[in-house]
Length: 133
Image (cartoon, rainbow, N blue to C red; front, top):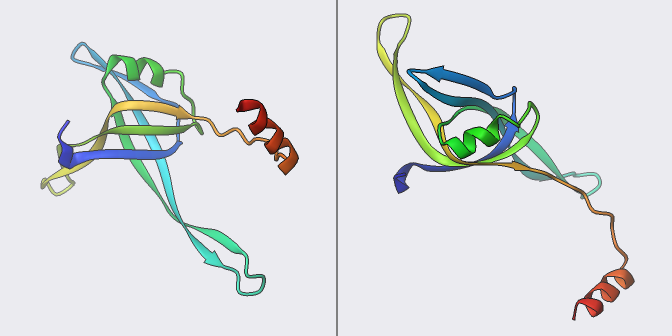
């Protein structure tokens, strides 16, 4: 993979993975949504809140056998981490003009699981740290 087109993406699956077979080869197609956020300060309370920007959809193709095998177990709504490169394919628009569509070609695919831990008191943290030492 070329360094100048490396991409890392964290997002959510917008649909179940789609298995596609062409020319004797099998690959997985994913639709991944990402939304960037930025902090804003609430003028009344002074509290920092996060405001979402627009959601962007990405087409992701998985060719590597290990990643494709893993991708089959994913489902709509799963949080994923993807590393790969950008690939472009030509297509003709309605006027017959040749254009290029970019897709992400995944070399690594991982499911991200967010598990919230219960809050610990300072005494519980001190006790855990002393036992670990």
